[in-house]
Image 1 (tube, rainbow, N blue to C red):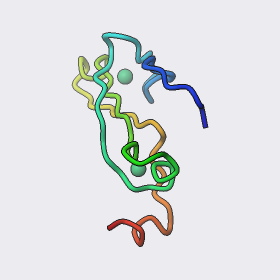
Image 2 (cartoon, rainbow, N blue to C red; image 1 turned 90 degrees about the horizontal axis):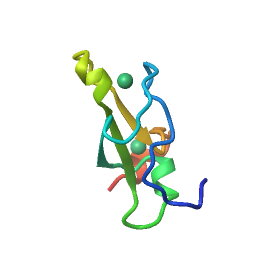
Image 3 (cartoon, rainbow, N blue to C red; image 1 turned 135 degrees about the vertical axis):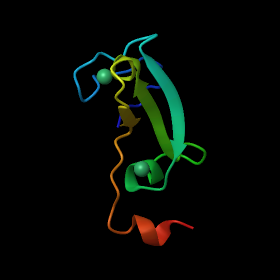
Length: 79
Ligand SMILES: [Zn+2]
Ligand SMILES: [Zn+2]
């Protein structure tokens, strides 16, 4: 896991658009999947990236960081 917190967006959307400044809406989605649980308290969720290039094409493409990985035991731990 990266130890640096940066606000730049480090990936392309699934349709190949670069998610750069002004090209993405950044949000937050609380979650309890394993990658989120590894993070500290208050950080248990995904940063979400809505691709505006896709939105221009009337397609909703939402990316998650860290990637959402529903684990086999995640449901049991979810309060
Ligand atoms: Zn896109
Ligand atoms: Zn998740």
